[in-house]
Amino acid sequence: MRRRCLMFAMIAGVTVIFCSVSWSKEKREKVRVELAGLQEARGLTIGSVDFSGIDTVQFAKRSWTSLDLPVAFKKVEHGTLSPDGEELAFALHENSSYNSPSWLGIVQRDGSGLREYPELQRPYGICWSQDKSKLVFTALQQGQPNTYELVLLDMDTGRTRQIESKAFVETQCFSPDGQQFVYETDHVIDKHGAHGRIKVHDLTLKTSRELISGVHPTWSPSGKTIAYFDHNAYFLISPSGAGRKRLFKNRYAYSPLWWSPDSRFVAYGVYCCFWKSIKYMVDIGHLQVRRLEDNAEDWVGETNPPTGTYGWIELSPRKRD
Image 1 (spheres, one colour):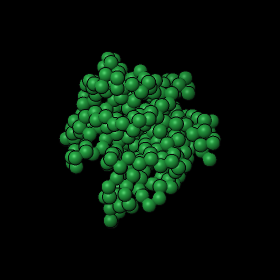
Image 2 (tube, one colour):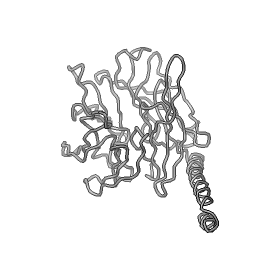
Image 3 (tube, helix red, strand yellow):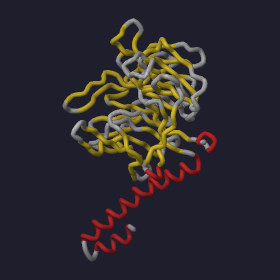
Image 4 (tube, one colour):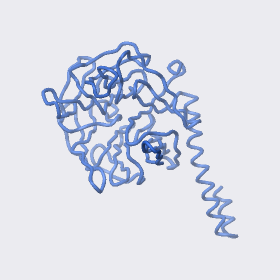
């Protein structure tokens, strides 16, 4: 394709523009074709949990498939799938009203084995460690009804540790070995956009260190880099704080980068369209996927910005049934 474009360029410059557009379109299509193939071969998909159900992307159709979550008489909110797609952690409401009290709930993907933690109120921003032995999330500070704090939960012992007030994590916060996690604090929004401070917490030392200014930090499954968002652009930086570089810019982006299990792809949300009716207005977003080796990308499904937390999972044929 490139060679053909260069030949035509000798005849007419306009043809170069046409070929470039065609080549770019071809690259975009190949991203989704590859994703659809990976989904068929090993069940690779992107999942989200909210409103009493699980949604997974069907790459070939740019659509979502929904699975009801049978948690009787209660509502699920702010949920996150475990890395293997087998368990869910979420805010479990007392009744069908989203204004009702909520606490941390954990359940198998088929709805069995519900565990409830009533003392951990109003959880959101939940992150699983790769081995599912730990959860980090933001919850109401006990005795302080209007103060939120970052909490670490040991799944084996049920013990919790308070990390920092006014802090939160994204769904991919842990290092691959589970000994560190990255989080954000001091989040503010002004006319220039969102600002915050990114920190790394060491579970062994029980200390945090500041990494850099920015928002929406996520740790790559390879362990080699942390992604974050700053001034309409995504950046990469090593966990040590060295080697900062800009990955790409998108003025319509609003989310963290969600890494695929092999760190080859990243997904992120963008504002796309604006739909207006007589009664209400709705922002429509797209979930974009970028292949990092060649920066080709395509959108794979619609979203409702700025809400929604997503994660890549691999569902085997048994798990997809």
